[in-house]
Figure: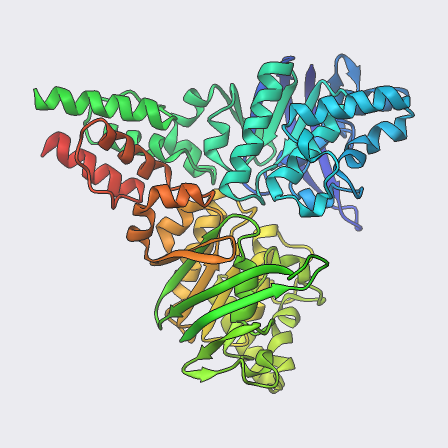
Length: 281
Length: 281
């Protein structure tokens, strides 16, 4: 779906001095995968994300979307159609006065016929569970609902891949849950490739693959279990691991025989329950 | 320090009766306390902060600062100038001066401080937020996001408020930046600034750093008190669209399996202690 080959990107200031933000990134993201990108502020996460739909073009190396290089200007609209983006602040992404007009905005611009547009908007709103709000005014919605409308706008474009740049950073716990469940469903039920940048480790733990960036390089890449089991290394990169992972790590360090790399509350509760029962017997 | 007595506030809009943002809310913040305010989006948190800092005048109820009723004042905001400082969400968007030191001096300058006094206060504020001298003459636009946020907070601290109020101070920061920011707030609370009130969507941060918690739901305060008491009321929090920290969920699940942990576990370290003692004790 997406491939980066030796991608290097330098931000230059007015004096022409450069700062290397991406340093020789090699990456292959399979169709249908669910990937989290983690890294401290300034590690290059958002810069990398902007390479995935040709908002930025690498200074060195190439990015391919379905084998089309992103520097092929003739293919730009295809690339942008294949890979959609959803950003942090829902208020900055909503343009119209009703929910359905907002979702239709991109389609209108593409000149999609009226009937088809209606169908796509309805389908997209159903996919994010916002169909009943079709005629609502966006400013009356909660943050989580607004973000789901923004997601519907991308789905209506029939993107194969959606890149989410901290989609839940401004939401309350309920909104966060709503949006994460929606994203998960897009991936598992519609087969959309999902790439999510987040600072919430519990969200990353729900993905199939976690990529850690530091100083513009990929420093870790694996399943959440593999990546988060390296508690000390992850912490030294300015990140965190889910609370239960840190707890299990502490227990292990203190000689308790428990499997490392646990991420979910339930599996951790089951493991500790077993240990406690063993001791009682 | 600050007392809210039966505060109500209604935003006037087209709906009959207007949009009730706060309904009979009372709160007593004592010297030395760190309050976390939680609640879903639209629950009235930000309106509450604006009333506490004098930006809005309540429709009914009183705001007392050290016993003095400031709702009576001609201008509540002037009555609280230099006493209560409010840091908005994403405060770095409000930086505007050409250098860090000028930006931070703006508040005291507006309060009529002499130039020497402005510089003294700005330097002290920079020291409190952990910005070295080398930042003084940099443009606020050429430093990192985390540093910008520190500059913005320093700008409020330079007015030497006795109460500091922050709306989601850690939003968008990476885990390391978030920890540093809260550690800094804890330190600031021992200076001229005697009490801190912050709004957060992260239950983990509130559990870790606040000693008192107030929970807002639909414009009402549904519970408030010590952090342990409040997070003990898991059902009530879930109803309000909130949650408890992951380790607290873990302990609840273990208790459902028939173990007897106290409900007062809020942090990884506390959970470790409790579980380790049962396993090895």
